[in-house]
Image (cartoon, helix red, strand yellow):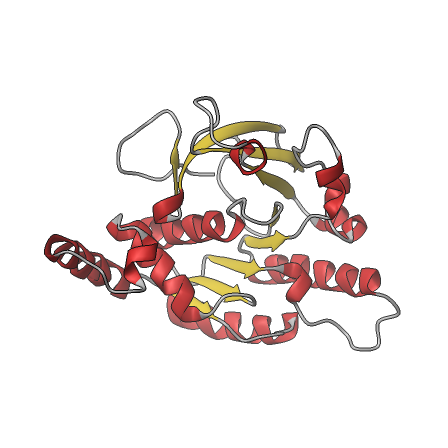
Length: 257
């Protein structure tokens, strides 16, 4: 509850090194929002295909190992569960756009159409470094700055939260404590300034192997929050389902952020 929910017009940056679960975390947020509010959630996936993301969502709704969905090695009881999950997803107002190299103006046009059709409540962008900027920008840093400002403007204009994933630079790997810091954001200046919330995903087992203390644990580090406290909380990451759950509650529901 650290963030008290995602607020309208907020730009939320979720960042992490590879294999931390950024895409899975964002999908969990979008899925949960669409399921609870019945309002539209737009996901702009610039890295993974619509099919890949759809399989991920299906896997964590059905609680079936995502790796089993691809080869089709499902047991009879899995098919029943999968059919039920597919029925839930078919009614869910979750819209995935996998246009490569899309720019913010095109995102805005698509969001305005969805706003009329579905009462759009959230936008997710995966990830900012793949968003198309001006071709005449003097440097990549300036280009990212313009993209960051445009995404914040998108959140304000539509009056909905915009969740944007970001890469971190490799300096993290050179430190003994590899928990991310704001300075680790790639092309970080404008992103840090524009964001209302900056959160990092950190999984200790990626670096140090699995132990009793870190098994299936994801730390969500809220490093900036314009209108609230900073801090951290833990979630359980079920890697086989690409699903995040409340760390202290083993019941079947998602942790809100």
